[in-house]
Length: 232
Ligand SMILES: [Zn+2]
Image (tube, rainbow, N blue to C red; front, side, top):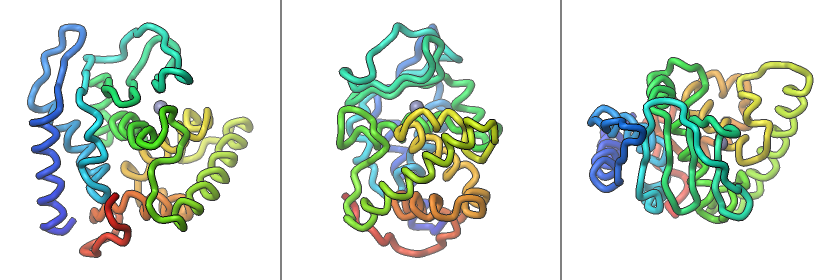
């Protein structure tokens, strides 16, 4: 990561910590560690896009661990939920992100392989920037990239569905085989958690996500290059 990029990420962290409404649930006391950990993950996530991509996420709610929430309607309300009743997280259209802290922290520490709950839920927020319902397609400025996005994502999604049907385990969790929005979230997790492995095992998908996120971190081998895609 270049010094300039590092500076930008740190600036994003400060803004997210300061400007988001942080709320503890189930008697959880929100700590600085929680704010900085979550803000740090989402700062990297949008470091190549712009912090304004999360302007509509005003609140971040944190539970100590998996929680039971009332059932919601995904289609009409524009709410993405994880799991039928016991949940690790949720992302609401133009609303909050809800996270289970134990899982969020383990992912942020790299203890769960490709899994990262924070990246997952905030990817849904990127997904819902241009549609009420998460459909696996975030706002993409470049027509070429948008065209490639549909092609590459759909092919890899169908491949994952087939692999999961056959009981074959790949880098991507079968949670991503539910639909294209979960596929986008799960593949983004892998992209940020295990970039080198993804680059080797799924070079086309890796390159697509790299062109979209433009993370410019050393882990993604980008060094001091300047962004190729203008900010939205
Ligand atoms: Zn999800």
